[in-house]
Image 1 (cartoon, rainbow, N blue to C red):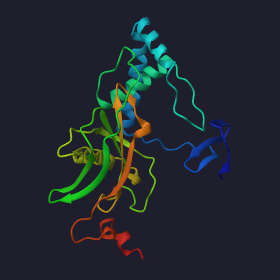
Image 2 (cartoon, rainbow, N blue to C red; image 1 turned 90 degrees about the vertical axis):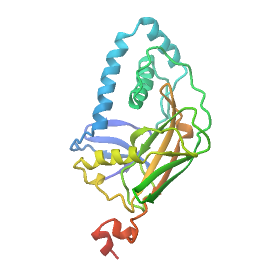
Image 3 (spheres, rainbow, N blue to C red; image 1 turned 135 degrees about the vertical axis):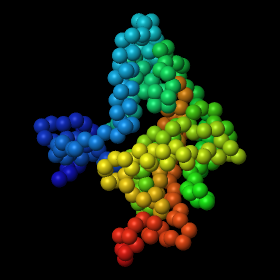
Image 4 (tube, one colour; image 1 turned 180 degrees about the vertical axis):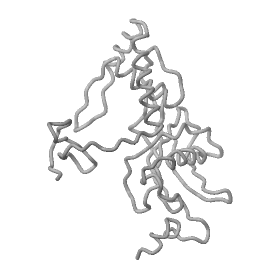
Length: 251
């Protein structure tokens, strides 16, 4: 049973204070069956390596990160945000760089100055080779564009919180960034998992995309681009047929 609660986090005995998009609530502690994706294991490996690297840099370099930390706050949760220390800022920025495939920064970078997010629209179309995923951009991006995507979802869904990093946006051609190969590669990775939520057919499904600017590990979350689009079914098939026999029989 969920009991409304406010401004609490953590556990007390078998009761855990949690939060979803509808607000705060209490729930019973449950030990879920752990299924770690390759991306999760890579992230944990990066964090372990970065924690060791923090101890290997010089004291002057660590002092630089501590000075930078004075200007950096954590993400707002339950209406609260606090300052981070030098080590956490070091881990925060370098985790993003490792995710993007860049070497870690040993010296603290300056605070970022982002340009407006150039991503304007997201579309999924179909050609003779299959589906095509594209982002429309107003201009060539100045910063990196980190692309996050959801697994195929029900077309009636309006909200998604399950995103995975699929890569950096490639240089645009004719004002569009094509990331079809990146999404289909990630889809194959999802298909190898036993979790049923990753095995919805792609045809007729809805896909959510999040595009975030990045520079030196700083993410411009305030101006992130979030959109969704439905994958067109194959010619001659309705959206209901594309989603499977069970859906086709549903009235």
